Image 1: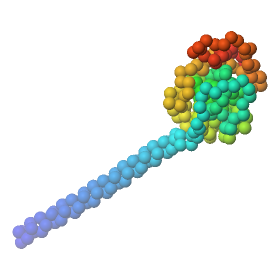
Image 2: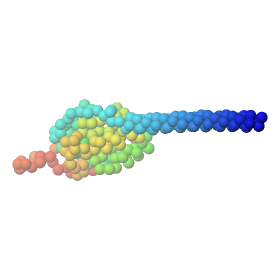
Image 3: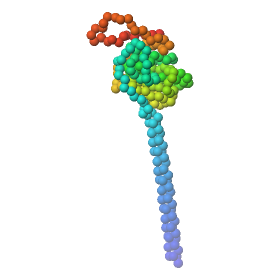
Image 4: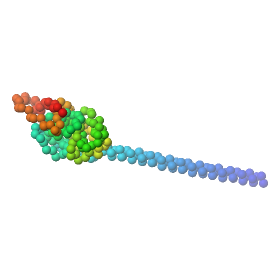
Length: 231
């Protein structure tokens, strides 16, 4: 009789242990399953943000052109692009910097030839956005000016490259500057100055052609030395 009770007790304990082990396995499986789902969710979320960030900074919308450099003229020039990205331009380049008035295309294009990035913005752009652009344009080889009739709120141009942007906070703007400013691959006159030029705005006439002088000696530059104009 006692032996039977002992056996029953052992069997009962074994069942309890088996149930405990089964419960622990279910709990572990559930925990690993939930943990795996969390890891997958985190990986997916990180991947989404990485792809989204790259998409926002993508320069796939940049339009490219094929203008050759060193084509100068003293006259007013009609450009196909608005604002222009290359082609014939004035002998004088625009001093890089920030302008609160539109500048002459002919001078701006010459600065692009020297490796500058020219940021233009719609005259009705909010003041806060203009302030952001001024911060971006405060470094060397940068031009900033309002531009009536733009195809977008903000347009960034370098020699033979241009992108229309959604505004001053568009992340593609800084990416454009990083890639194209003073890029030796795309700059016809890499290393040329972006100062010692002119600061003429579009409400002032283009500088007149200098009076003829003696023929330059062989090998001398035929590009006149600009005299900075009052802004």
